[in-house]
Length: 287
Length: 291
View 1 (cartoon, each protein chain N blue to C red):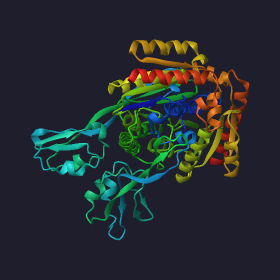
View 2 (cartoon, one colour):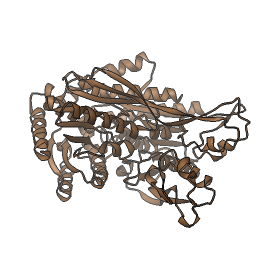
View 3 (tube, helix red, strand yellow):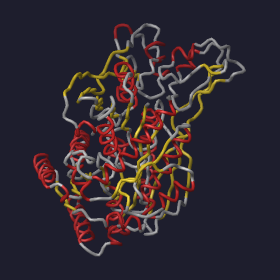
């Protein structure tokens, strides 16, 4: 069972839910938590654990070999991202614009643009008892998160596919990184807060999930603050509310120190149990 | 004219609420640009009139004309994005996965593939309820080009601010360190980093500042909810000192932050106490720094 934790708006509690849920479920089952918010990965801050593996992740970019080039211009013409530019007899490659499509390289009649690797980030695999944590971190200055998200998913599929439950901490928003982080999962939990910003961004996230034809449910965080509009929206649109985590200054305080909440706040544990039961039902249905 | 970008790395630290308050305080001096095109919220507080609306196309998307397709599969073969699956006896383009590189069209022997402009979203030129001009946008679902839409918003904002003789452009940035953030930062005169003393807030602050540094832009920092974790706040203050980042203000945990938003108001309109005082002083301080 693969579950993604996502939200339109940032800062609504994705990492709080992902880390607490993964830890809570791992009391009984083997769980893999994968942090796909590669621009700002935070899940690892909540677990100590032992690092079992670490590897650099690379993207492929063309490298110009002057001696082989006859300056025909095919490469510049092929590149739709302005990443390969020709100035007279000179070819310039702009790696940060390159999408690794290989067109310039493979269409070059003289093999003057072979693809080489360029580091785009790092993957870390930690283990604590039943829980594995996979975290990828995009190198500062790299603009594209999607290739790293893709490679992280490949790693998880290759080495950890036997785990019963996979939880993916998704990046915020509705653009390409979110799609890449959620398209392969069985179910998405959208976490929001009951405020106008929360509602507005929840609607965007719901539209995205519907466009992708994904099954999803909602968890409300900071319940008690704001107003009833998120609840009314969910009811009117037939969206299931799985749990409501209370608004509590203690949550902000414990989270700020990197501590797990269910161990110290019983109301939080109570709601987390609801999420757990919901996931167990999903697993039963799924099998 | 000065461009001030408000960013945070981590989402949900209060960027938008602070931007809206500064917009209120700056009154006629300012033009507002919402560059968080992916999950734009500033309009919920400033109520722009969506005066002018334009579609934004950026990049390309492949389309296979089945009439000419011979099912040779060369397109799917060269596609590095697995965007041309074979479904119901046809090769079709998955519009979400297609990045518009056009390699498929180059190798198609029957020229059955066209590249069409890709719809990325809409942008708007508005007047807010505070009577300030505002440029904002709405990214299409799953769109690939948030950075380009951000650049569009910024360029339109600049043109309009110049023609209306504004002193400041206030830019609400997006979370993260990727392409929309890079586009928000380019050309800015000052960056306001909004953070909170949580381990993730601090972690993200350091990463985003690494990016800001590479642009050589001067930065200041506002610490929100400074009193939820004093150790964390000390760590941030130390970081600011070492990096020579101006400490603009520390804001206490105060639910009026959220209550103002629920009331569709800026904090400085809703709160009659410490929050308004701190934000008013912050805006004056920022103006002083960039003057």
